[in-house]
Length: 298
Ligand SMILES: [Fe+2]
Ligand SMILES: [Fe+2]
Image 1 (tube, rainbow, N blue to C red):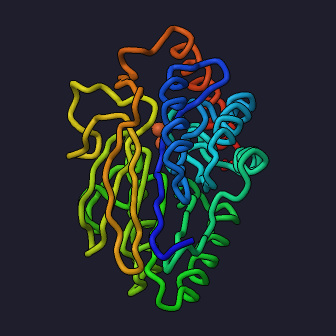
Image 2: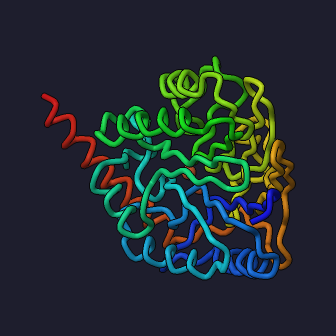
């Protein structure tokens, strides 16, 4: 490993056993990675198609990741472990059963890795605000990883972005981490030398500066959401592709790449009846889970 290293950031690959819209795009990404041989691939989540309870989809997604010949690290997305409290998408929320299922397929849901001069840290943003035991464990672990970085610049990777614009905004947890988690993360980072925060989830490519830190929202490799609607994250580019970083001892540069053969797909155009039926089933399950939780709370 030289002091310079190259990382391909993929996100929202949304691969399923029975829903294969994104398969050919993933094939193009695999070919690109295997031909260009980056030092590392980082996947910021939503690896499974849509339903975190679909064991077959998680297994299929893991097999697809194993086609990469480069080393890789992966984080969970809301479609892999359930969504953030208190207002998860269609009430399919993160819980220990879903986290355990994810870990069986993919291993740790948060990690740190030293590469060149840098320390790369991946956090599970879905557990923020969940009050699951793992949430507190992750905060403690993060403090240790930041504290022991000893002069290494840090790159942080997340599924949901820290913010749309800045740390004090009042944004909706469907698109960014929640406000209390943002305050806590901001405080935890303190004066740590975090130079890059890479995220997924939004299905849009964008970069901006918040709190003096470079934020990079990786595009999806699968499909964007409604090209005719405003960007979900205010200024994102609705293109399918990957981000490629080059890290030097003290700096990082990045660019978006559309690997040869990748197709620009729009979820609203390609969605089939089978997917609509799956969402209806998930919605019903979410309603039942919500009712059971409110009954337990009475
Ligand atoms: Fe996604
Ligand atoms: Fe997501």
